[in-house]
Picture 1 (tube, rainbow, N blue to C red):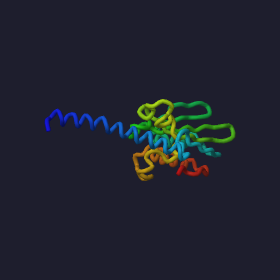
Picture 2 (tube, helix red, strand yellow; picture 1 turned 90 degrees about the vertical axis):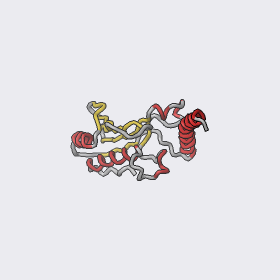
Picture 3 (cartoon, rainbow, N blue to C red; picture 1 turned 135 degrees about the vertical axis):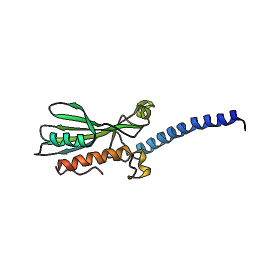
Length: 169
């Protein structure tokens, strides 16, 4: 076999692998949609607390490597500084005061790679962290799954708040 034949085999392989991954993603997303396991949206928990929620949130954020993205009189939004995923951006968490109680919203924004197809065909722009997602077949122990990273971070915050909020499974 000549070197040009060997080279063309490698080029073919380099083209087929990403195509196979994209086909897998599309089929998996269609399977999730048919089974009613939508992953789009945000994970939201509501709670009451007499504690200084903003102080607890700031302490958790600095210890968990989250940076402040936005702040106003009734809410704060943080994003983790680093992620190991090419499909998802770092987890985002927002806590707010509604006038009657607090709420936590947590989600993963998908990268452009995941939204290459129109109308969110492969993955929605925002993805809830309480749903089992694309890496479910690897099991919950897959430590680099961004959903597991986000759940672990948010559950640590829920524990610090000590407000009777159920952890995210």
